[in-house]
Length: 134
Image: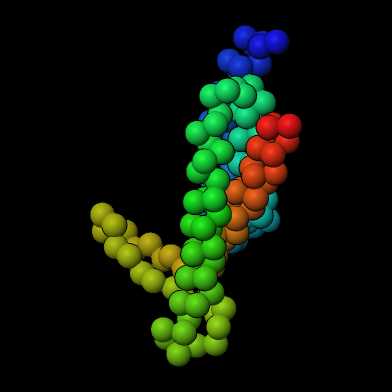
């Protein structure tokens, strides 16, 4: 049985939860939060969407291994980028960017956090898709 209320609200909740998960990852470097918690929030939103739209969610299932692979690449880049500067592995490296006259400092810990985000998101979504199929 398909509920109009559940399916209608799940789209809105999905968008809000994905935005919150990105904010948790970005602010996690300075405050509590990070890639793991952000990935769990995003996976929860995706699980809600999977249960609301069982038939339409088959396109998500095909993309899950790619999401995990992207996360692993970001993790390795985040950890290994210190080797380019002759620093120990997993040392934080920082890059300065100038956008519209403002100096922005981005670092390898943020890449690592997004790698964790994608791996957790992909893994939990993979488990949820296995539950949906059965």
